[in-house]
Image (cartoon, rainbow, N blue to C red; front, side, top):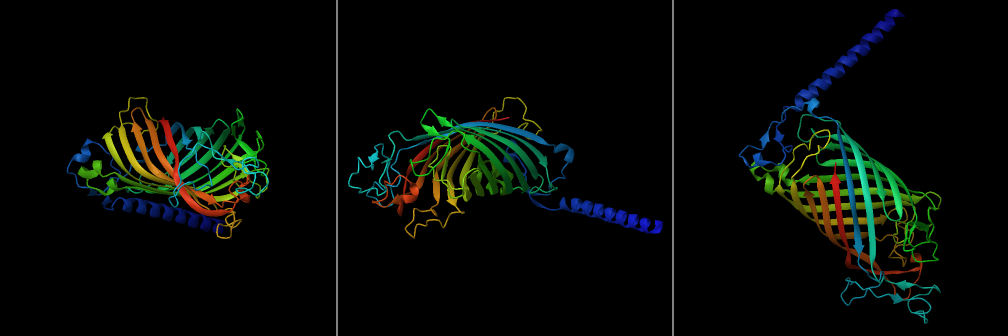
Length: 416
C-alpha cells in the first residue's frame, strides 16, 4: 500500500515538473520572436530613425502592476423633430425635419384617411427630444495571459462597476472585459435598473398596451434587466509604421458587435414596454447592436507620463489630441422577435434595423479630460398612408424607408 502511494506521489511530482518545464520553455521562446514593435508610445523619440522591426525586450512582471481606473462622463443628445413614419419629401428615401404636428386623431382626421384604429394620435413633435445621462465607472485591471511579445504584453482582464443616472432612470452594471491580444477584446456584463416620471414629460418605465403612443406612466413599475456579450476589434495603422512616421499615421479603426438581452422582469415576452423615455417598442429578448468607427487621430501635444502606473497621479497632464471619425451605430435589430411581423409580409416591420451614422469629433484634453461632439443621421420606417396615424405601433403597416437628420451628440468626461 505504501509502495503504491509512493508511486502516485512520484508520478504527480514528475507531471508537475514537466508542466513547469513546458511553461518555462514557452516563456523563453516568446522573447525570441522578431516582429513589429507596436508597444511604443507616441513621443519625441518617435521622430528618430530607429528601426521599427526589432526583438521586443522581455516583460518584467514587477513593472506591470495591477491598475485602477475610473471615469465620469456627462453627455446627451438633442433629437430634431420629424413626424416619424411620414415620408415628407419629394426626394426618394430622404426626409426632412419639421416642428409641426400632424393631427391624425379622430378630430383632426375625421374621414380616417390616416388611421383606422378608431383613435389615432398627433404625429411629430413641436420641440424635438432630449436625452441626458451621467455615467460613472471604476475598473480594476490585471495582467492576464501576458507574454513577451508586443501583441500579448498588454493582455489583461478588467472588472468594472458602472452606474448610470438619467432624469428618469437609475442603472447599475458590472462588466468583465478580457483582452487576449492587442487588437481584440471580449466583454460580458449585466445591468439592472428602474425608472420614474419626470415633471409629466419624460416617462422612465411603463408598459405599452396601445392606450397611448409610447407607454403608460408607471413609476417604479418593474426592474429592467439587461445582459450583453460583445466582441471588439480595434487597430491603429501607426502600430505598423516606422518610428519616424508613427506620429502622423494614426488611422484608427474599430468594429464592435454586441448581443444584448433586455426585459422587464414582471412582463411577458410579447408585452411591449418603454424604458428611458424611448419609443415604447421594446419586447423582451435578444437584439443585435454594433459600433463601427473609421477615423484619423491628430496628436497635437503628447504627454503620456504616468499613464502606465497603478493609479493616475494628480498632475497637470498636457495631452491634447483630436480624432476625426465617421461613426456608424447599429442601434437595434430585434433577433428574438424578428419574424413577428416582417416588412415583406405587410407587417409593422419587426425585422427593421435602426442605424445612426455621421461625423464625430473626439478630444483627448489636458488633465485627463475628454470630450465628444457629433452630428448623426438615421433611417426610419415609412408607414402606409392608411395606418401611419394608428396609435399602437404594431397596428401600422410598413411601406418603405427613408433617412433624415436626426441628432446632435455632446459629452464631456474625466478619467481618474
